[in-house]
Length: 398
Image 1: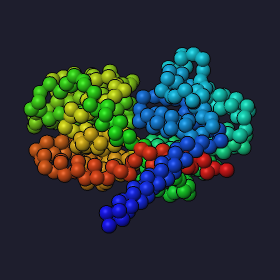
Image 2: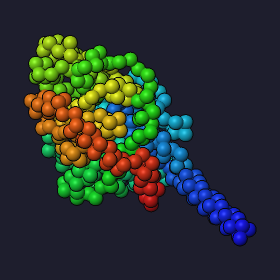
Image 3: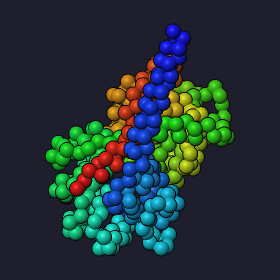
Image 4: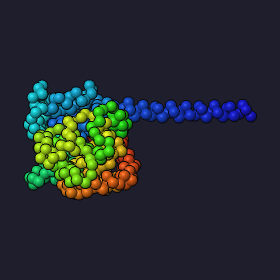
């Protein structure tokens, strides 16, 4: 009897080992497969924002899955953010980095045409200036896929531009968007069945980076700690945030940190001085790793006029921060599940924002409930799954 039991155990162990081996072989085959396609990623202007962060993640992943991957841009200083397998085509001098997107687009078009003339067996994935990329690719009979992180009508009031988008975007072989709300708008306005691929969210990396030791940016432990992270530009609407803070001065004790850089920095400084907010508000420069600073805050506030799918909100969810965001046309509502995972306020309404900051500063239980709900829904933005979707879309184009 003992002999039979021993034999049964050996058989079970053998089956477990075989099963483990098969799983490992399947995993190896999936990750070692390399497509023979040659891919071009077209993005004329690379700045320090969420869209660019996604570009680095996606391109570095795809470079290990395709025979050749080329990035075309007019921003030379961004080259160091890509791995060595990636061919980076850009001007020889960094002097072009200071120019606006318009000039950078035409420089990048030159490099795109040059690359196409060298090799017609390529596939273009356009991250920016999609209309130009589609037009060039159509002229040379090259397949092009566009990736849009916003809906054009949300940021442009120019009817001519809207008409051009409506006519040109459907000519792409495939359109990728990063939000279900944007996908709905593409369907309604352009009759395009866009593919929605969420931003790849590397939760383990964010948590790891958040543990890096940094100085305390908030000086008083007993004050409500609020952080705002974003480029100093019109669409981020920092003035609404600052107007809300002026209303808070007489209501609650708080400290606020505004992190970022951009052409509106001087205007933001002037507002802080004019409205006597210097004791409550500090400005920090852009940080490549903002997570240890976000981790120190109680609230993260977003005041944007329009967004695609803002990375900063996803990252704040991972770090268990309570979020109050403008209910701009796309992005925040989807991430926060219509306010179940945070709080939304009307775009530009600083009184509504101030009111909600005050309310949740006094309702810790409700804050925790919403943070917990947001965390329970974050799997939609899984890092590996969303990156694989990019590969599958590109690899399945004939």
